[in-house]
Length: 405
Image 1 (spheres, rainbow, N blue to C red):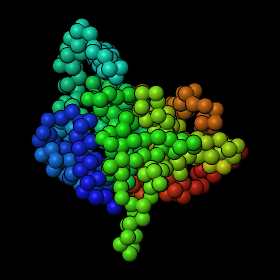
Image 2: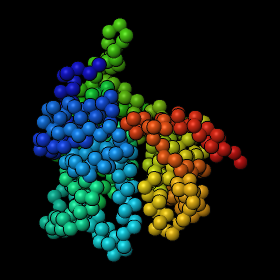
Image 3: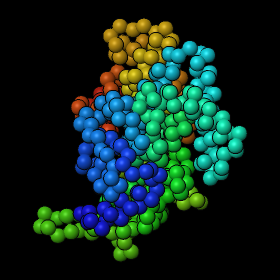
Image 4: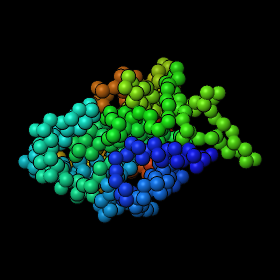
């Protein structure tokens, strides 16, 4: 049950961390049952007099973005991953001289973002270089994708890959990652251009929200935007708060010395190996997806002695990578997934990811798939989150085979 008071409390808290003028354009593509879209697509636009564009098909978000050219854009991690893969595919086909110019502009933008992240004013000389790089290189690239007017970019709903965040920082777009639940009426913590940000974190508490962690790392939250309770069939409301008003969220994370929350994973999705080690699948999956060939990944290993993974070739990046590397394969994506050069590159990608992970987190074997997962085929929810149980059941034989000698 979400009351008017809780909705308004969250809307005011969100308004305080968003740095935007009134009457901005917002693209609405998630179901309104998703609390983020309900806040950003209904409640906040009513409060801020924003313009909302409805996109019924999430696969057409890129097309709608190019048409609307919004000043604000909220994307769940999968959307930002797909956008970055599409841009990387285009960049990979550009001449070396042009790529060198773009890489230089990326470096200037990331340096500029670094000063902002530390809460420092960039030097005048850097401001001049950034202004030139933005005008001459970055804005034309962003305009091709409809993102040249974006001044507030955000994400939530699942841990975001730091690689994706830093990729967009190269364009001067800082994705203000946030965290919250339906039970918190949406955002509970957020990075903010006004109050500060840390790339890779999900920010600090907004409004009246307080957070802390339990002994096992579970995030606890309370505040005026936290829900009243769960509605029972008889019309009564069952509170889920403890005696002090704290809600156990089911998410695992840590709070640093500056009050920023760093999200690990859902408590129920943590993998417990046969040796009793806890592993965050999202951490491993994000490391694997840092290579542009890998668009989707699901790690498996509950009650097993090592981890395995299902990897899906990126639908945009894989053909571009193949063209850039002279790889020709019959049968489209399936042919690419079987091609020895592609598989060798994926081997290197997995090995590179493993070097950044602890021994328990490393992937020993994998299955490379060609068909992208999506809501229509059941592997993703309408809000583009993985349905792990569905994927495990669908690929049960493949997963079992990865543990055979």
